[in-house]
Length: 173
Image 1 (cartoon, helix red, strand yellow):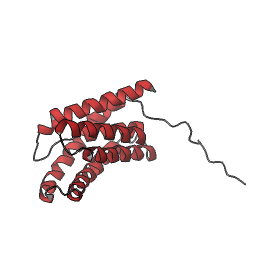
Image 2 (cartoon, rainbow, N blue to C red):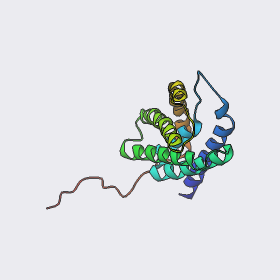
Image 3 (spheres, one colour):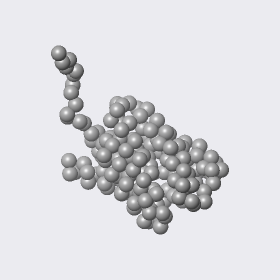
Image 4 (cartoon, helix red, strand yellow):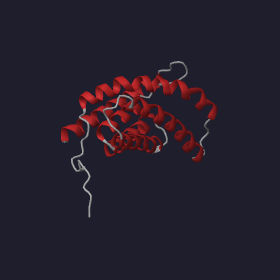
């Protein structure tokens, strides 16, 4: 268990470091790939909602401190992304091939709209036009990036198996 936690921490830490240093400067067709978001989706799908939420919080905190952004904004959004990906992985089959792609598309869109909404609520200037110009290319890049990232994470992290679930239903009465 400790080894799995250390592996998950290392994967999320490396993804946050690469996102801040390399991937934030890459722009392809008007969009930027988000390696950290995709990695959190993979970790959440494989290890569950608790791992996803905790990993999202600390990764967001690291990104906020590294970029000198508003402290807690990215942490809140990535916590919700990690938790949502974990719940999606817990409630559906992790072995389905479309699960990471669907999660990447949906959570990329929700992340973008959540960031816009939080910035609006906090009184920061942000443009919805910029969001709509970068939303489609960024979502497509995340969708393409999730396949290799999920494969690497699946090799490093074992899928979380709950042992307390009942295997069959017993009727009472």
